[in-house]
Length: 171
Image 1 (tube, rainbow, N blue to C red):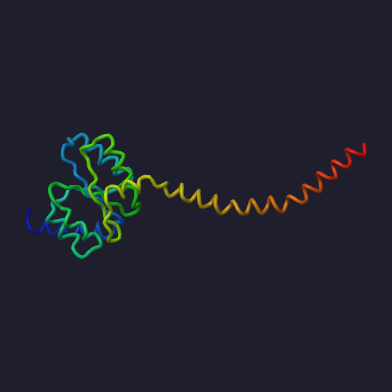
Image 2: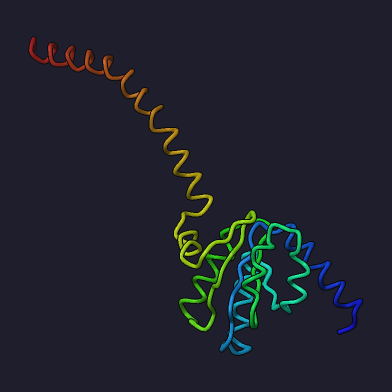
């Protein structure tokens, strides 16, 4: 690879890593071309960028960014999954894929300059989706309002029941 090509790759990686909310390092040894294509297809559906990177070029690209803590973990063949929109999206897809194909291993992730272990990444996967969290929050907000409405309506309905019972008694 020519020097100009390498500098272009480094700049492209630097730009992508600067925009991404999360970067996850994976080991993919043992995956054949078909499985790798399937992984890339699934990641693409979730708007996740996945690249096999040369460690030296990636080290240069993340230098001075919040992804720099990944540097000591760049050994051997590595793939980098990153997402500009959803920080949990890559983790969900990779966890699902690694269940079916154990050759694909999630090594470590970085988000906002903090390293996350594989166990912590698995905890991300177990979190509800953004829409699910919104629904829960909306339910929590609506619960007190419906309780207040029921309490306010309660005396009126009690009076109506007493009057109904009294009228039934008099007949």
